[in-house]
Amino acid sequence: MKPGVLSAVLACALAIPAAAAELRLSGLLQVWYTRPFGELPVGDPAVPPNRYYHLRDEFTQDSYHVRRAEMKVAGEMGEKVSFVVMADPAIGMRSSNVLQDAYLELRPIGRVALRAGQMKTLQTREGLAGSGSLLFAERGQVARLFGDVRDRGAVLAWTARANEGDSLVALAALFNGSGKDSDVNARKDAVLRLEWRRGDHSAGIYGLLGATDRAGDAVALILAGEDAPSARAVLEAADRTRQLGAYCAFEHGPLRLELEALGGSLGRRHATLGAAAGPARREHLDQRLLGLAASGAWTAGRHTLAARFDRLDFNWGDRFYTSFDPYRQSAPDVAREGDFTPVFTEASLGWSFALDRDQPDAAKLQATYVRRSRNILRPPPGEAGARGGDSLVLVFQASF
Image (cartoon, rainbow, N blue to C red; front, side, top):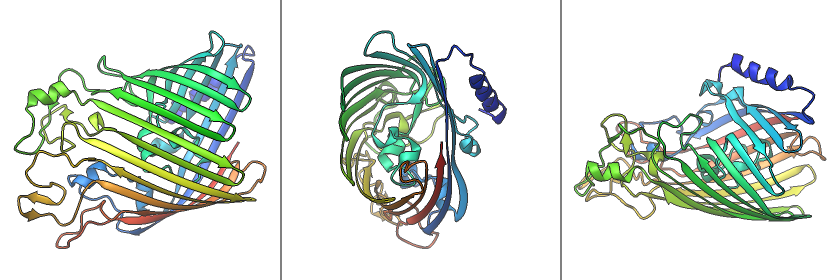
């Protein structure tokens, strides 16, 4: 979405007639200063780890960034219909589509709600949390790759129980599976989620089942190895995409603890189907992933100290078709420059200072240091050993 279109969206929202029972405007602005330590510039994308590890451009630069500039309009049209429109012009340098959320919600009866439009896909816990409420400058690997993802579709929600401080909600959804674009085939992602909350404690389980978002003229990409499947088998597999995850969160006074796990198949995220012939973006047709994340925080007055560890294995079980390990060797008995096994860890330390004690997320300062595993980059020519680097991020945030 271009800036002119964004202005039109906001103007239309502001022009909603008085029939709207309530109209709410909100926003979030985040300014970052990032300082990389070590070797973080993006390397050769053909090397396996760079095929998998997700590194935002901001982390590679010693620079200031406008990371988020969210503008949100929400309203009620009578008792049964509501809407949300949220855009973030800060992503305009990376994508022309700055529209994030845009959906309508219908509440036809009691505890049932139907939501349709563009929204997040109901995966993970931290991924669904608002950007302004994060303990760290950025989400962990599992949340940012699988939870902080928007798609177009419809969600049916049923609140099975809703007492004071106690709720149980079941959600079922169908999404295009194509991100912030219209689908080009009839396949859809099926999503289920069950979440429970009691007081400040919560837990949930969620899953997703989908396949390729390519049209019918897709071609099979080449999987390396003597035992690689035929092109027909690759086409029939249709880049099936599956995931299953669970989380729990505990809060007691100043203490907050969170634990999350997610497993599944890579599927279309690292495709074996494409528009033209070429190498596949993974090593096995049924390649699995496994992610784990744990975090804790302690709040004292306006200060919050937090720590997080997350680990993401993009080939859980070491599946490949070659007779040698493709992450350590380029051919039998020919070693690579380093060990590029796609298992990545991040250890983060964070500090937040709330400028307003009563509204800690309204205006705050944050500092986050991220230490990464040393297997995310290829070494310079003539040198050996996989490389990586750490980052320091300073954040100034204001919201309304």
